[in-house]
Amino acid sequence: MSDARDALAFLRANRDRHLRELRAFIAIPSVSTLAEHRDDVRRAADWLAVRLSTIGMTDVKVLPTRGHPVVYGEWLRAGRTAPTVLIYGHYDVQPVDPLELWTMPPFVPEQRGDHLYGRGASDMKGQVAASLNAVEAVMHTGALPVNIKWLLEGEEEIGSEHLGEFIRAHKRQLACDFCLNPDAGMLAPDKPTITTGLRGLAYFELKVFGPTKDLHSGMFGGVVHNPAQVLAELIAGMHDRHGKVTLPGFYERVRPLGRVEREAFRRLPVSDRQLRAVTGAPKLWGEPKFLSAERIGARPTLEVNGLLSGFTGDGSKTVLPAVAMAKLSCRLVPDQTPRETERQLRTYLKLRAPKTIRWTLTALHSADPVLTDPDSPGVRALAAALQATWGKRPYFKREGGSIGAVGLLRQHLGIDSVLTGFGLPDDAIHSPNERLHLPTWQRGTEALARLFSSCG
Image 1: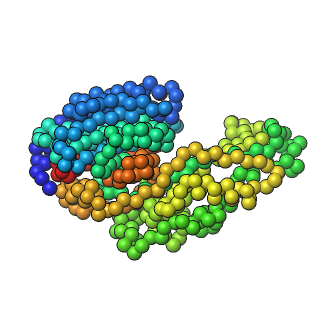
Image 2: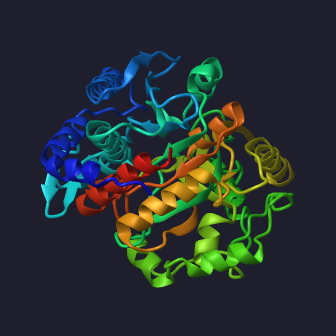
Image 3: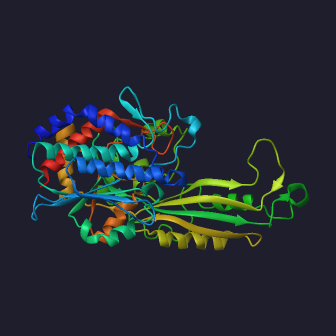
């Protein structure tokens, strides 16, 4: 690895400025799913474009999609023989609900000790800022040995809805050797981590319809099948008592874990006690033949994400509801596909739903599962940078979540993504009081500076 000491010194000398810039970025309420924040999303894109230009990127553009824009920039002066790294990130954030659980305004960043609180601090404005700061440091103190391109989207939190068509339309512009994606995370502050697998996603809305309108439960209960009851029974039947999903054919294409992979899972410092502490659950649940880490990273799931039916206000109202709705998601593993999972769910419903109701199923979002070769050049370079920064060999893990861009980049550009990130399991991403552990973030920025200094 080449000498990155000047870049590291630059980062340490500019910590206060970089923290001020991150605060300004977090302060923009770029909630992609809410129409009232559309202008804020655009403002965040413009902020990034200015920052890219400031650190020396060229051809910086805010490019439209049919939804929120993509921010692009490049620096291609390392030469044609040098590798090209595409840095991916997203600048949109989740809604802040429930607002009353926040201990400070979500878009007024607040530092408490070693943590910076605010929506998007960890997911993933802090990770985008780490990449920007690392590239700036290397450029300021010497020539970059690699070409750099940026792909920063504003729709990751709503399923990267228009990113696929954007990548298809800009294939030549986005051509690269591999993508660096810091939207994963670390196991702990002292455990540098590279993610080599992501579960896919198939997300659905299921509605069960009964009578044409809400009915008086005293007058019609017992003669009209209650849609809420039917929905509850259908959902209850989607798992057996051991936690296995009962959709027909659900496990037929699931790739079994090999000996080396199972050994890697056993090495991970993830205990059931830690998982109970992080989640607050009294006891863990799931397939008993697999470690908890394996159930998170390498086994498929079906989860209920939301339920709604009938009267849910204060007090009582004796209605038999006309409709019941559930939001369902399946996390998928190689070689499952969202389309096949939808067929399996529809088959289950056709077999199990009674004739006393009718139902509709709408597929809302999807992402393919991904595995990355841990011996690829990009992963090896990142592993060396993490080891030089933390003084220990990084952990390799499969992540339970999904990042739509990873599958889309592989599908349309034929490239792999090197997945890392410096968020922690207790950062409360997607929840009230999201936070970023600043010492880990700063060390992660230094690791990225080492990566960019050496991977040419």
